Length: 366
Ligand SMILES: [Zn+2]
Image (cartoon, rainbow, N blue to C red; front, top):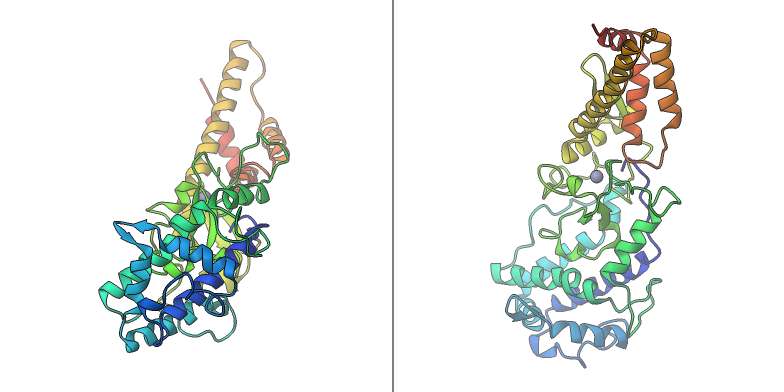
């Protein structure tokens, strides 16, 4: 969110998979669909859009998850009573229309799972999550542009690689990568995040609009974890990585004299969205830690320089020299490096006369 987030070249393959999942799920919830109809022949068009997808799906359904075949999960869904199927179908339609949540006057987003038996919901959830856990890992039946293919379709590893290269901020292959959400280092073990959690919304497990690669600190509790990204079914006060991006709408406000940073919005209209994002990711406290650590690091540099001057009998640092040090450091900051925004905020804060004077007096070594 602090950085621009873009769909990647293979996003159409994920969108095509999302369409297939929606079509398959709605067919399973059709009152006329029974378990006996779920076969390689039974999945052919017009049930699915193409023979390639039908054949891929049939192979996928043979896979086993937690001791049960995915086919048996699909049969459990197809065996639900008509009223439960109808309720599930409404839920599928609403969740599939995620994009309308970010348009005027959206329908209420379902905050509870559809009314289904525990068995029916568990089977549906396992089946839909398997599209991500198993289908995506080994390869979807789509080329990057979304065209069905019988072999060599887009996989999880390809998506991760495409996301990384699309969001690289430096041309150097050795440069540190930056997390699109927090602006910190992406790190060695980034996570594919489901913006809307897949345990509650398994239908969105391979949705291009629901996936992004972020640092593990952003993704794990006590930060994002399993927290909702809406307020009781309303997305009105929330940014969304693709459908209501936060980059450009966020700014870092520093607070003197406590040397802290706050996640704020550039316009009052976005203040609640910035507040919710901050609550989700604890950006203010994480940015403040970085702000203070960076300050301590520069303070240490100047103190050591000052000591060397004292030892060699040179004149002490003047306030003008400290200001010059900060200005040069600021001019050298690279926008492609992690924590660029935090460091810019620190450089600006340190040039405030009161802060500069405080820093100068901290160098008053004996
Ligand atoms: Zn992050």
